[in-house]
Image 1 (tube, rainbow, N blue to C red):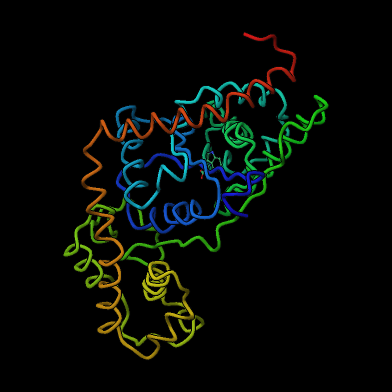
Image 2: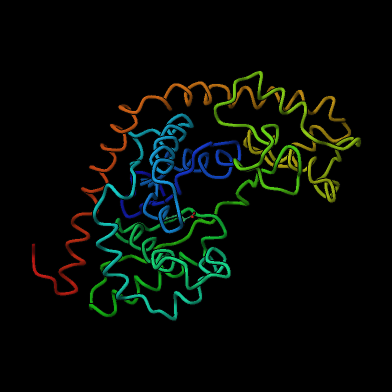
Length: 338
Ligand code: TRP
C-alpha cells in the first residue's frame, strides 16, 4: 500500500496534550512521521474529544498549538499529510449526530474506556464522554478511511466504528462507508519514568528528572539520562535477562526505539556492558535524534501565527475531502439539501 494507491487512506487522531515528552514522541508522534512516507494520511488533533472530561479552555487552546508544533518539529510534513484540528471541520459534529442514531445504547454500554474514565460517578459523566466512540467513528468514516493506526487500547473503538459503518450501509441500502481496519501499532513503545521503571513517563510527575521533554536541550537530555535510575548489574545479552529490571528494560527500549531497532539487537551490541558504557551511548543517541527536534520545537512553539496558519490550511484540505462524503450521508438518511 503506497501513496499512489488511492483506495487506501489512513486516518488517525490524537488528543491535544501540552508539555510533550519522549513518551509522546516515541509512543505516538514518530509512528505518524513514518506512516506519511508510505500512505495517504490524514492526522487530526481531536480537540472535540478533549472536552468530554472537565477541562481548562485556555490549556486546551495552548495544547492544540503545542501539539501542532511538536508534530511539525518531529517531522510531519504538510506537503505529504493533512494535519488539522477536529473542531475546524464541521463534518465531525454533523456526522457524529447521524451516527449517534445508528449506534445502539447496548453497543456503547460495552465500551471499557467509558467505564474507566467515568469511574465511580457514571451519573455525573458527560453525555459527550459516553458518545465519545461515536464521534471517533465519525472522524474515521467521514473521510472513508480504510486504515487506522491506533494503540491496543483503541481496538474496541475501532470495532465499534466498523459495526456502525456496517449498520449504516445495511440500513440505508448503500455501501457508503468502507469498514476501517485497525493497524495496531507494533508494541507501541511505552516509555517509562527515568526515576521509576514501573510508572509511565508523564507530564504530571513532580520530578523533572523523570522525563525528557521535547523542548530539552542537549545538556539537559544528557544529564537526565546519566542520572536515570538503574541497577548495579551489567546488561544481559537477551531480553529475558531484563525480567525484574524495569529501569534497565526501559533504557534498552528507549535505545531501541530511537535507533529504529529492537531490544534483542541492542542487547546483542551491549550485553555484558555496564551502565557506565551504556548510558553515555544512549545519551549520545538521544542527543543526536532529539536535539534537532527540540530546537525546532522551541522555535515553532511561540509562533502562533504560523501554527494557526498550518492548522487552517489543513482544515481546508480535510474539509474538501469530508464535505462530499457528509453530503452523501445526509442524502442517504433522507435529509433535504441545505
Ligand atoms: N480515541 C483516540 C485515543 O484516545 C483518539 C482518536 C480520536 C482517534 N479519534 C480518532 C484515533 C480516530 C484514531 C482514529 O487515542
